[in-house]
Length: 82
Image 1 (cartoon, rainbow, N blue to C red):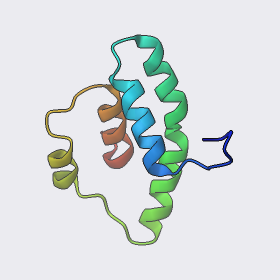
Image 2: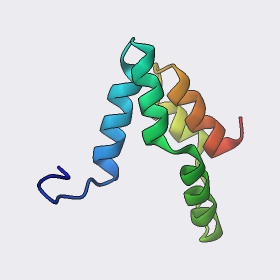
Image 3: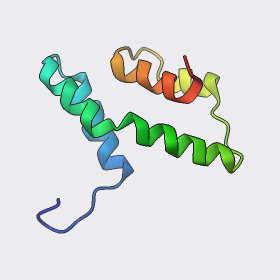
Image 4: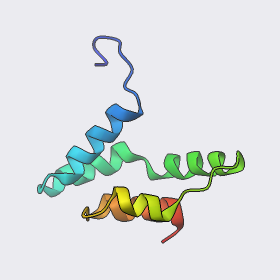
């Protein structure tokens, strides 16, 4: 994508992160964490909250039902401080 001068969007990053995090090889999880940039996600959430956004824990649980792993735990930690 970058070679074609196409900038990846949020969807592209989410697919990349999910794919890397779901691979059983631990080295891919490390790559997913680098791409995920938890600090940036926390800052983005704070900016959204300042504009009135509040994440709905019940809705997030429904969407992620049946999914487990470090990425899901990180997401809950970012959104709800858990």
